[in-house]
Image 1 (cartoon, one colour):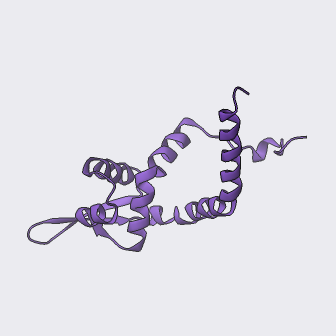
Image 2 (image 1 turned 60 degrees about the vertical axis):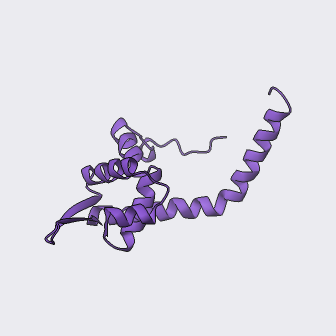
Length: 129
């Protein structure tokens, strides 16, 4: 018995570029930043306040990665003093549906996942497999 369809045309292929992109766009801080920017454009300091557990260094690196991948744009505002605002791009907005689907899957299956973790941990506590 197999759990997957062996047809080659439906085969999921994960290449190095796929893995790199997913690592850069769906990491811990990126999801938090995208969650905030989906609501409205924000300045760096507002993002720091909205995500209090992120360090300045991590937030800077995250915003640069998202900008490099075309998910977020950095807009210089013509104010005095000059200010910078971060906005989600149209490409970034296309991530909403797949991320929502993963979050829905997680919410639906979390009780089964928690039970599996508890069984696994209990087996580890009981000795070698």
